Amino acid sequence: MHLQALFEKAQASATETSAVIFRELLDALEHDAPFDLQQLYRLPYSDFSTALNALREWRSQRYVWMLEHDGPQPVRSHMS
Image 1 (tube, rainbow, N blue to C red):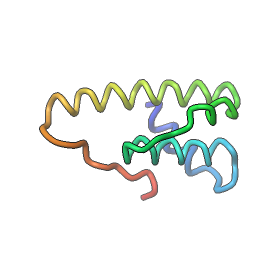
Image 2 (cartoon, one colour):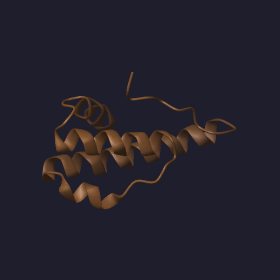
Image 3 (cartoon, rainbow, N blue to C red):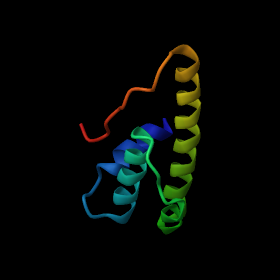
Image 4 (spheres, rainbow, N blue to C red):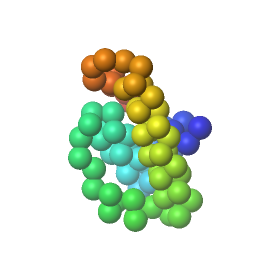
C-alpha cells in the first residue's frame, strides 16, 4: 500500500522535488545501492511519512522473499 503510493508519487512529475527524491529512493532500493537519507528531510511531512512507511513495507516484503527463495531478490523497476 505505501510502496504503491511511493511508486505513484515518483511518477507524478519529472521535476517535483518529492518525485525526484522518491525515484532516487526506489532506484536505490531496487538496485541495492546507497541512498542519502538526508534527502528525506527535504520532503513535506506527509511525503516523509509515506517514505518511512514504504521503507518498512519494502523491508518486510524483502525479508519474507529472502526466507522463501535462495539467491538475490529480483529487480523490480519502477520506471516501467
